[in-house]
Image 1 (tube, rainbow over the protein chains, first blue to last red):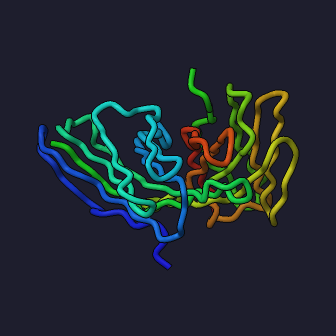
Image 2: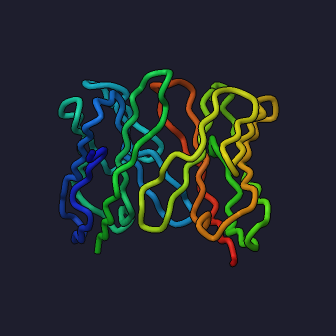
Length: 114
Length: 111
């Protein structure tokens, strides 16, 4: 029972480099999310996808793009990494149905931009 | 103003104490209220979930929601060292809407 799987777990980038964080869930969930977590800031929503084929901006979308590739996969891309994007990134998914609102999280990706 | 405000802590209490964690919010559309627990270097895990106003109890944990005051609380009775973690409140307006988290409270239970 994999749940939500994120890759990679760790990454170091140089300023200006690009990369894509991958996320996949095997629970047949409709909604998927990308958050970043910084000390003292809690989880801040970057982008979310309420259902396959839709994406919406969250609280801190600048500098990021997302793709809901299919129902299982939701990727986050940094086109030109900046030191301010150093953070721990979490992907999450929910069923998107009234009876079940629990969000399941991946193990996180620790990204450092130097 | 942030949609969800949470007492930042950190909070350190002796084992066996009653712990109270709190959040306030500004969006009256929020209907679903959750508490997540996050251990160091792990992803958050759902601890408690409440729909609309009222109380919900699960073992040593009690979640309270007061929609008239836009205020939610999590109480931990007979706290244990294993309860040491960061606790995050979270809210959403509907089952398909975005989930907004508080900033988290780091809790430490001293043996």
